[in-house]
Length: 270
Image 1 (cartoon, rainbow, N blue to C red):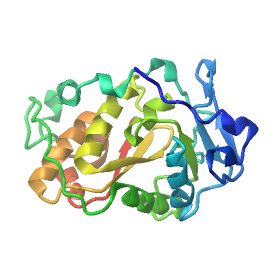
Image 2 (image 1 turned 30 degrees about the horizontal axis):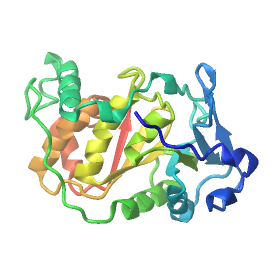
Image 3 (image 1 turned 120 degrees about the horizontal axis):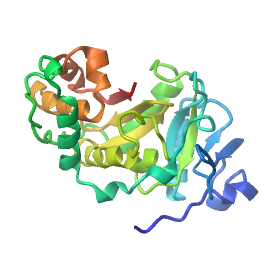
């Protein structure tokens, strides 16, 4: 696998980012992993909380420099990325996995007999991929809108979001690129989940907008518009993150209703 050049080390000698064509506020480079310092920075994040417009003002030019934006929550009980159990050494490459095989594996592992009612109208056999949505906005424009909602506090999921920049090939790869282990009790190789995020990028125009210790927020440019399509997508969400259904909505059909036209997906792993 060819790796992308990491521009972050340049910020060690030029914190403003001018050599990368950026004008960054004060921030910090994170290279701390569960096993100690990594050989290069995994991400940069601002010292101050993000405000409305921050994503577009800083994230858009950063993407041209090879750094993709994401909001990280530093206000949770587990602190920020410097305190998280980042494990980049555990990560494979998202492009090495097949999305249907992964979803079928996760579905079959999670669709247990005692959950028969929760996963209706489906049974214990993987029902297959949901159809692609029709875009209602440009994916990057939608991402900026959702990021502003998180930054301005109109969404309650993040307590203190700060803009971070990550060297990643595409937005879906950001969790694996930093060695994020939010779903550690579900799968310790987050690159496998990033394979699914890549497929959602292609079918639903998602972008990874926010990461907490064990939470993930994505924006959605092409959400399902019918309940039937939403139920098929809800099956994918159950395979991806069963806790959303079993510890949230109470059932896949109820969960699916909220997916119709929804431009923000939130995931949480116990």
